[in-house]
Structures are given as C-alpha cells and as structure tokens.
Amino acid sequence: MLAPNPSSSRHFLNPSRLVRLTLLLIAAFTLAYFLVSAGFDSTEGRSHYELAQQVLQKGELGIANPQSGTFDPGPDGRKFERHDFGNTLFMLPWVAVGNAFTAALRSRLPLDRSDRLSSFLVSLNGPIAAALVCAALFWILTYCLELAPRIALTAAIALGFGTTFFQYSKTVYDGLLASALIMMALACAFSYMRDARAGWVLSAGILLALAFITRSTCLLCAPPIAGYLAYQAYRRNLTPGAWVRMLLFFGSPFLLAGVWQGFYNQLRTGMFWRYPVLQPQWAWIMTFHGGNIFNGIAGVLFSPGKSIFLYSPALLLAVPGWRRMFVQYRAEAWTIVALVVPYFLMHCAGRKWTGDWAWGPRYFLVLIAPLFIPAALWLAEDTHKRTRRIWMTILLWGVLSQGAAIWNDWQYRYEILSLSGHTENELVWRLPHAPWLDAIENVGRNIQRMAGRRSWDVVPGASPLHQQAANTVNFWWLNIPLGPTTRLVLFMVIAVLLFLDLVLWKVLGRECARTSAMPATS
Image (cartoon, helix red, strand yellow):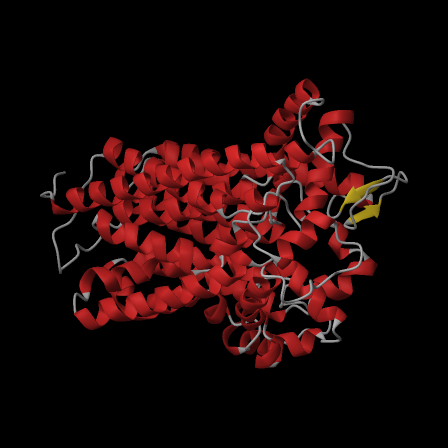
C-alpha cells in the first residue's frame, strides 16, 4: 500500500464521479486551447497531414510528388514520410470528416483551398492532446495518489498554461501526441496499483505501443512502466496464470506495433530494422555523431534560448515536491526517475539536442508532465501563504511567457530571426536573441502593426494567411478569410464558446472544491 498523506485525510473518490470530473476537465481545456489555436499547422505536422490525405484518397503510403519537405525516396522510387506513422493515424478520422463535408459543401464554403476544412479539423488534435495530458495528471493525482481534487485541478492548470503544452496545443507536432500517450499510459499503470484491474495493464500496453509508432524513442518509456507493473503484481502474489495473462496483455500491443514498424521501415528503406532518419543523409544529425552530452545537459537546463525552465517555468514548482514524493510514493517516484533519466540523457547526447527549429527543447516535451507530478505534493502539504505566493508568481510568469508565444507564430519568428542573420548558436546561447524573449517583444511590435505604425515582417514564400497571423494575433477566428456578415456571426459564436468555457471552469472549480471538502470514503 502507498503511504498515506500525513498532512490531510485521503480522498477516495467514487470512480464514476472522478470520471465525470476528468471529462469536464478535458472539455474545459480543449475548448480553451481551441479558442486560441491557429487553425492551421506550420510544423512537420503538415507532412503527416499530406500523408493522411494520400492514405484516404489512394490507399497508399508512398507519394510520387509530395509537397512537404520531410519525404525521402524509397526503394520503389516513391517518396515516404521519414517520421513515424502514429501522428498520421490519429489525423485520419478528421481528414475523412473534413473531406466528406468539403465534397458536400464545396460550392458554399468560402475556402481559398479545397482542403482548408480538413486541415482545420486536423488542427483540433493539438488542443485535444494537450488536454489529455492535463487530464492524465489530474487522474494520477486524484485516483492514484489520493490528493484532493482542488489541489489536482490547480496542478493541472499550472501544467496546462504554465508550460510549453500551452504553446504546442496550437500545433499537431507528433511529440505532443506522444506526450499524451505516455502520460495516459503512466496513469493506467498507477491505477493498477489502486485496484489491480487487468484492463489497466492492457490499456498501458496499447498506449505505449501507439506512442512507439508515433515517436520510436518513446520505447524508452516502456521498461520503467513495465517494471512498475511487475513490482505491483509481485506484491499482490499473483498466480503463474495471472502473470502470463498480464504479460500477454502488456506485450501483445508491442508485438503488433513491432510488426507494423518493421513493415513500414521495409517500405521506406528496404530493411525492416532501419529507420529513415538513420539513412546517411540524416544520421549525422539524428544520432550521437558529433554530439556532446555535457553541452546538451547544460543547454537543456541553463541555456538562455533552450532552457526547459525558461520555457516551462511551472516545472520549478516540482522541485520542492520530490522529497515528499520519495517519502510517500517511493515506487511511483522511482518509476518517474527511470522513465525520465534514460530519455533525457539520450537526447542530450544527440547532435541536435536543441530540437532545431522549435519552441524550447521540443524533444523533452514528453518529460514535462511526469516531472511535474511532485509539484502537487508540495502544494498539498505546504499551506503557508509564502508557498501560495511562490506558486502564483511562477505560474503567472509561465502564463505570460507562453501567452506571448500563443499570440505569435514561433516558427515564423524563427524564420525572421534566421533571415536576419542570427545563427542557431546565437538563438540558443545569447540572451538578447532568445526566442522566448523575442516572442514577448514581438507582442508589442504586432500591436504597432495592427495600429498601422509598423510594417509587417515578411518571410518569402509565406502565404498571406500565414503572414497575417504572424504579424497580428495568431488566433484562427481573427484570420480566417470571411465576409463582414459571416465574420460577425463567427464572432458571436466565439463569444458563446468563450462564455461556455468560463462556465465549464466555474463548474469544475466548484465541483472540485466541494469534493475536496467531503469526508473520505472508500
């Protein structure tokens, strides 16, 4: 059994009630993220979207003449996406719905491109994935660690709006999807500790397998979670038959994922074990060749342009909670450490630990949510006003810095900085050129542009829509090309959605506060 929380009574929530709270939280976060989304993706997700269209329209994984730049020639002469397939897989339902509506309403839709509706729907995957990360944290803190829902909600808000998840909710970056899958798998594993249901083991296996075919490096997260499940099973003195069943539940999804990955690699490179990113033209970037692990560690932790704490300030809130985590939830703490350390060190050792063109150290997005779990323990046990003030100060800084990024288009700003002659080394190691600082400064510049007092920054080849979003406010409902009447109707709809989201947050806060005040029941 886990050690009880010594500072307060435990909160054994009715599972059905907790499910309702979690679904309400998902809805509130998703709607909040949706209202500030861009409505289009300017990251590598564009390539995954192009592949999704190819799969649905022609039933093929290869493309003769792709428009995106992340396709490489395969053995049969066609070009294949060098990234893994998981992100494309989760786009397929949205693309199918968007294509169907576009075909039915083509003559009535004010679109400047035939697939605009489909690409807009695909952009919803970002808000949903970020919301699922926050929901998984909420579930872990309440159902698994038995903290008060009020504390869990506060922690989820800090994670959702005080870290890079806020900014990445505007994208369909595959690392965001992988983060959601890993965090949900961790929630399933910790839930097995509570009630020993075999379904949690199967769910953890499925989620980890999906994470593996989304970003293959997520395979590093499987052994720690498997070890945790085995430890819990050992403590429960399972029969040999139960061990076999547990092994099948957890391992079968990986077997299927491995078969798929081998087949996909065979198509792309001619060898089932070789990934496209390990081809000679990419291996010098994507492997340890020329890397310096100490440089990577220093950069991820302390560099002005890529420090994980500058882009996700809320992570600082977790630091005081680690001692409590090891005292009260030792097995869970070691599981998180075993999950984080190998992944962290491997990516720090890589030549491109920076993630290249990215908002912060994007390769480490997967680690942020697990690392944040101890923050809730500090908030739950340290009730001093000073602690609350520290929480609010750090959270406010996180929201403001991420809010500046939400206002801007970080990839467009990277291009502007690059065109201005700034090198990647300057963007990483020189504070005046740090992207997060540029984002804050550019909010003021964009206000001047909207007032007609400053000219636009123009990236050659960027679409008019992209230029407008990057030089004004990067919200989809402000930039979508519509007539005056239609735009007025849209603004009314946005006002209703904003009011609905505020109602959701109010109801969620009231329900969590009321549940936290109720006596614990088992």
